[in-house]
Every structure is written in structure tokens, then in C-alpha cells.
Amino acid sequence: MDVFIVYLFIATATPLFLWVEHRKWAMLHIPFVIALWFAFIYYVAVPELGGWGHITLWSLFIANFAFAHLAAFWLYAAPFIRKEREKRMISTTK
Image (tube, rainbow, N blue to C red; front, side):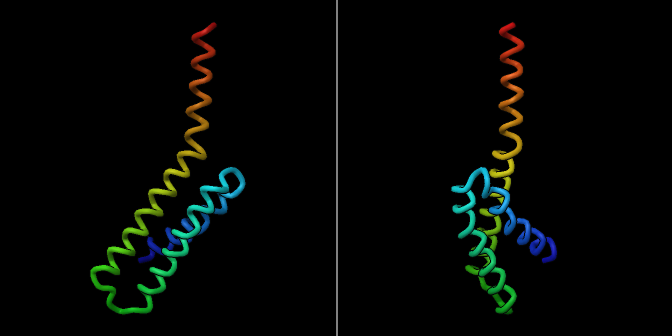
């Protein structure tokens, strides 16, 4: 549960990092973060989630996890890869 709470705070901060460069991605991610917080509050408030509650909570968690990793790749790795490809293309044309 501690790891989930830490991830919840990281997922909540993700739209803030995306806001400047990729505002559309941040706007797309905000409803998932809100849903994840509601699912967490429901998880804490209700002693027994049941099958659908666990499916919903884990689905939201996995969707946020995938989105955060995709966004991190798009923001940090893709520009680096693009820059390296341009360097290789320049060096091969010389």
C-alpha cells in the first residue's frame, strides 16, 4: 500500500511536468488521475472492495503507469534518440 501511495503522488505530479511542452497530454491524463484518487479514497473508505472494485483500481493503476512511462519516454528518450540519429546522419553524409 505504501508503494501505491507514493505512485499516486507521482502520477498526480505527471500532468504538471507535461503542462509546458505537451498540454494536450496533460489534459488527457488529468481525468485518469482524478479517477485514481477516487478509487483510492473508495478503497480506504470501504473495507471490502469486491471483484469489480479491485479490477477498477488495478485497471486505473496500470493505465496511469503506462501513460506515465509513455510520457517519460516521449519527453526524455525520444528527443535524445532523435538527436543521436541526426548526428549519425550528419556523420554518414560527410
